[in-house]
Length: 458
Image 1 (cartoon, rainbow, N blue to C red):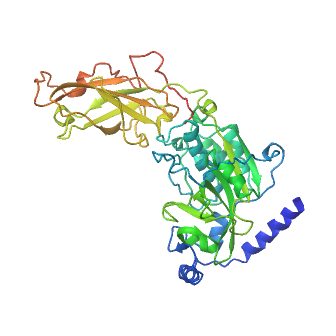
Image 2 (tube, rainbow, N blue to C red):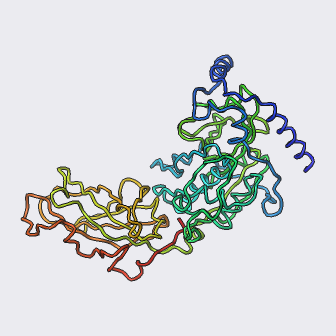
Image 3 (cartoon, rainbow, N blue to C red):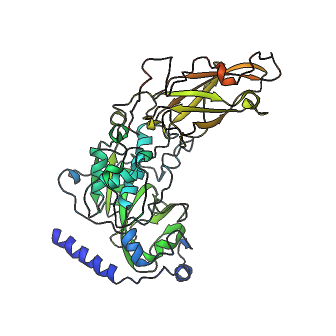
């Protein structure tokens, strides 16, 4: 078997060396698609301007290695008898819940195995925590820089996610300055370990059948490798099948679903939203050299492992705008607050509020843009919350939940809606705060919500 893979590797090398150094001919691809009545469309994309040489070096450099030992599937996969005919983790159930995360752009740094693995892992985090609302944004850079020596395979990110985990993106933002120069591992934040999510396990599948891949997908997105051709650079929609162009090399993506009737996989790529169906694509079962998914990985994620060391987050310094600006004609309330410097596990979490002790309301978006902490000197994060148009004095209560659902301390501030009882206080509304600790990240309401948290690992 090893000899066969050596021959295969040499064959791929020959094909790569024979590939011309010119951008893909989009018009030629379109002509072929029309002539063959293909079920997909082609056009200019984020990578269609790149030469085959650049694509092979910077995007399609995934290596194939045989799994062995604990990495191999030693027992056959159980195939459920009642698998749905269609599955898409972007659209689940009557509420059309989306358990995936945003499309990313790996750029020209040959990091597809990391991006596909982290992309699938982020979705599995949402599934394990049973919360499609949260938006974990984990650091591909930390995983890529720390996962081990090249050559580059799926086994590197898989092993690292299990052993060390992935911290939040702000711990080590992604940068692709030089495709041939991998940034060092020590570039990530000092407290990365307490901000990291870990997987429980992973298993590799070599040449799985469609039923085996579908069985694995019942638990969440999986990771799959396939061989890319030139026409794939120009894909803009539909169900892709190879129709034109030379072979470029191996690439890794996250598979988020399938369709029996159309016999295709639904996948998340890492070439930005300017490629494909805003970064997503569908691909026919069995297409391409080796067939799609010839090497695939299933990751096991458990809430107990993700949140084993989680601590409740802490926020502080809740403020409204000045009294004259605090309540607009529609009753909305612009607020700002800070959080403790190590509370990065709030990123992707939830913001909650209540007025006058009424029903709690969750802010419409996850906490993606956390721009200021209590110690870094940056402006506090500002959000506009739904308020009230009822005249009189009111109390707004605000709190947050991290990715693991741990709830922070609750801060309060009073405000007045004109038209009711006059407000004797001419100072800004935030001076009326009833239990807001003005110290950075502080909280006077609960002894177990203070400190620097660290938690859930994001």
